[in-house]
Image (cartoon, rainbow, N blue to C red; front, side):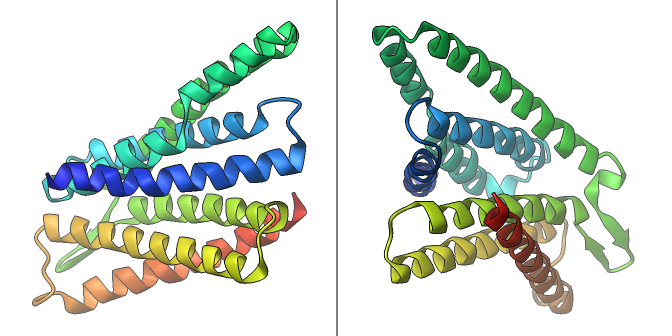
Length: 235
């Protein structure tokens, strides 16, 4: 039951973010081609490859529901093969065979490349010392923190596009941004703490390490988010 609830929660967030991202892309580039669906599928494929390596291959038993919420729930709802199929069929039905073929080829090849790139990045990060810097009495999970930074950068760019391309009131834009950033910082920090707990650290004996890891991750992600906002404004 916990796993079902985790998938449902992750899926609800993924579906909403997919709608906002695809809507923003369509308002930006128009509906002459399925740009919105292509973007969410490529982004989702990259994140799936990257997070599969970090969340599944590391096999942290304490975070099974956490992984299900992200990989199955969020990314499963964020990406959409059915919409890709429907939009391709509409292109064929309208006689736009070139666009239909281009959509099929681009979507399949770009998503496969994104998956490969995500897996490659994930494996590279965990190649040396299993992605951690360890010393007597502590460790820094630098691989997971780097993955969090990559996710923060992508989220900030997406948020910037949404703020400028989707017709939302200013107060809704502010709330949306704060909620997205807050949820990401909380979940990314939580996973780092669970990682440390899985490796034998506890709040009672290693409070400074726990707090330092959470705060450090938050500061890094906030800095990267700021950089992503600057980049997003130039797109």
